[in-house]
Image (cartoon, rainbow, N blue to C red):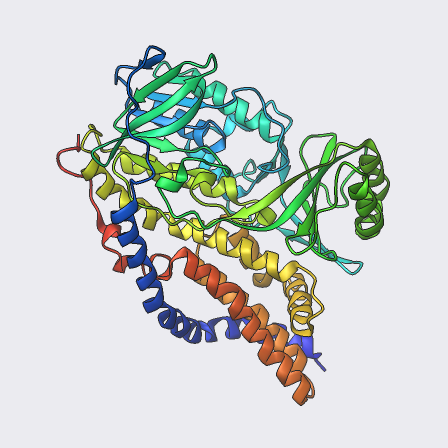
Length: 538
């Protein structure tokens, strides 16, 4: 006789298909309110879009203006800025990159590139930048909960053997891309601090910045692309920045140990929130401990953080890593940073564009940030490729509005999954949340389509928002079914109803922030059909 779990597994593909209709009904209900929100944003853009842009400064003795021989100015040379500089330079554009600090940085995020991001790196001819930095291949994840674990491999059977995820030191990766960009004669990398965008008659004409020697300079170009990262001080004039800090990551490096599953990221569904491990070199393993926003971040200075890591976190670490984890805490190189999320809410501005974390952020739990940025760069390159002249700022701005819609499949899939998974993976005393968390672990442990589907979404290999919604509600229905079989009770029915309600409360606000219309009905957006302006076309 088949068990209840076997019966659920046999017919779950039918359930996946069956919930499509109800899901679409919910999407249509949200559609009208989302459209109102978008219209409001457009009105705000028209009324206030350039009000925060600094006008051209009066020329003084210490001020210098560079003659406008540049096609594109890029503010920032992180992952997005450096990759964009090389990409546009290779297309023949004259590019001027202004970066606050061109020395190698040491960060605790931006260290895991998903397979979908690596494929974009190949498209941009930047795959060699993960060479010679001791980058490690990543083939999937290991998920741990309550002493049990399951391995979730990326579905890479249809790709070349070189295609996989990559993990590395973020600073080394960025330096390699900067070096490659600087080899192009039409790309100029300069260290300086951009203080404001230069606006004339409602059009961004360039930037004002200070060189490393303190000299104030104005640089002009037909297009300015702002890629100055998550702490951007320029984006307020180009978008509606609704930044949310969901948690903090506490980072440390483990040495002289091996992960239980080689070349895999490890996610421990800990209490109160997830703990991550992944390799960043052949001898180092990065550990990121998540501290939720509702919990006070322990102090690094007075030893409170070390005590927290030893007493609360260490008992939840896999035995193979425990000794190295304690040694890393004792070593004392512990750092923290806020985990920010921000939906893309641009004000289309003639002469300027936002990219990277300055434009759009999601929780780093799923490591999708670089994949989204590289995907955006591929899209922007393809949109700009047929344009010979960029000087008609208004026509260019109208044409590039299509960028915001065309990027949605990849960006919204990864953004929504990151936000939803983080909320499901966090511990909670609520019975419905507990059941949803356990059901998610068990659902992924079923294997086959139940693990391949979600992992292909997370990896950027299958950027389909509707598939994400179906899998998310499949987990919820799987959770309810387990409660009701074999004998439902009033209490179980109540918990089941709260599971479905809770799942909706998690995912639909995230999708609404992404834009219901652009995500699920892009063909209804006029910008979807924009073609290159005839006066800019080569």
